[in-house]
Image 1 (tube, one colour):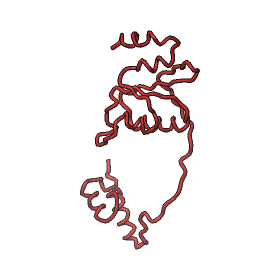
Image 2 (image 1 turned 90 degrees about the vertical axis):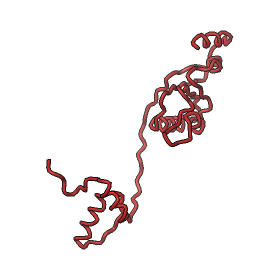
Image 3 (image 1 turned 180 degrees about the vertical axis):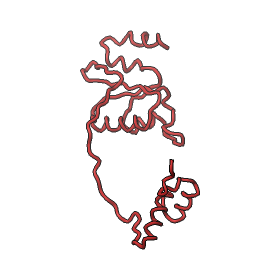
Image 4 (image 1 turned 120 degrees about the vertical axis):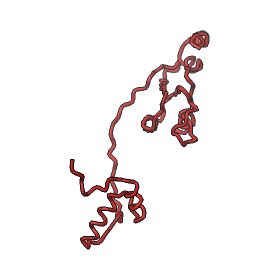
Length: 161
């Protein structure tokens, strides 16, 4: 396959040369040089164009749906890994449904959201406004909010531990 003569190959040397001349990539530097050779005025990143990201309807399916004694709904979402895509989705869900009672059960709420971050899954959930966070198990108190006779809940929940 013939090499594309417009592409610099993306080597680290090309990128370093680009940075040295104020460009972000070897390809940008390459095109800039071609424009200069043609003696055309070079205008690199001199204008900003506004645009709108169109709204799109999306659907979210919570893992578990419980009805509380007062008739309101409690949603339970379980996460082993809470990826940036998942976090963005949850942010949009909460913004679109401000009165929702959603609770998170993490495999490990102390897991960092990314390699270099100090923010844990639990910290990020609280930042989003999710106040109820648990580790691995459904808290008996959550179920007690949903059943008519909560006295047996703790015994049944403890059965799995």
